[in-house]
Length: 543
Image (cartoon, rainbow, N blue to C red; front, side):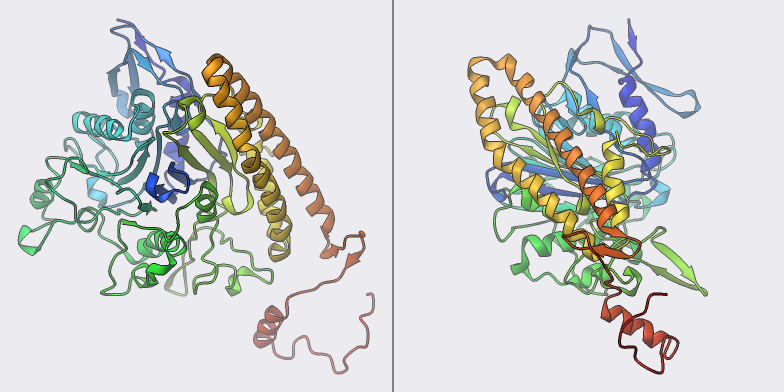
């Protein structure tokens, strides 16, 4: 028996990285079914917040002999030995060569359900094993839940988005506490024509008990809750989220608010009230899925990730804390105390803490080698760009696989976008216009030429299929690098244009634009008379 200790080495290193990142918890995921998308795609998204520098991971397809095993190392010298399947599929980050895509968000749930004895103690590990071993969302659900049932799940709660060329599923699970066995879980298929979203809070409430085509669940999901005293059948139907993730005010504000904002933008006609996201007593929780007012394109879905609650009472560009130039970012921690009272900032969908975001597009009407597109962005989605990475490519853009959080580098894609995003905070309301102009130019071009690129690739697939990966790899790598070059030109232009408080005009002349009048009025309210002069000067004099 030959033992393979690399899940691979890439996976083990990534698991270590994610064990750190999960401490931040905030992630946002959107699921779009075929009937809800403009072109019949199934779309899965995942925005991951973390205190790390993101890089894209590549796990090649591989063949294994009978008896070969993968070793999953655990603390305390424990380990899990899993037999390899005969063949594993290629994975680019969170999408495999058969167009299966998976995203997630963690919910804390009941802390006592964390199981240090659960050998499947990483959602990421489950996701990667499913991507390596399954082709469909339903099979991915089956594999992940079988692994949890056999080896136990270690965490308190997780929501996982799973999509293939035909279906989208949401799977939610929790551990069973120290010394417990298996996990409690439920999975539901999102009805065609609907969209779903989750963001660090359990979303599955009541679910059908006799509909295996659309809903699967663990045998113990209800009995365990009764045994622990979480649920009494006499009190009404079983509700997974209420039982295993009792909502708290802060969680609702930071998690449910994001779901509300996605739904209110995708389906404004629904008139969803923000009350449930404000922890108002008696407010009805948001539905698990909703029908969008119009079918969503990939770009529409990207736009849903670019949101600071603009135009609502929670708009982070309008608070006094946004400063004179409307910066939407709030420095962590989100929760804080002052003079014995507790407070918390808003946590919008777009945030400086995002490490990466993807929009995975799966299409049944295009060959697998062309159909799966992993649209990938680094750092804050509001100030980054998405690049297309087809799942058949054989290499990744070099700048997207390098970087060190402890050393700034112009050769790292993450640092490229991070630099522009951070510099924009100096005068956000003005700089964001320059950023969005270039952002739109780049993404306009990508989507403009996509049909031609894909038609050429599809033609190759019917005549010279072995050339499709070569063609798409060259396109993806050259496109990524050209876009990074353009982004650094943007960065250099911002440094030049916004310098020492001056703003250059088109001719390079420095202008004194000062502060916005609304902000000045607020400042004068706080400090009446402090800045007043007895005589209004006719013209500012140079000091």
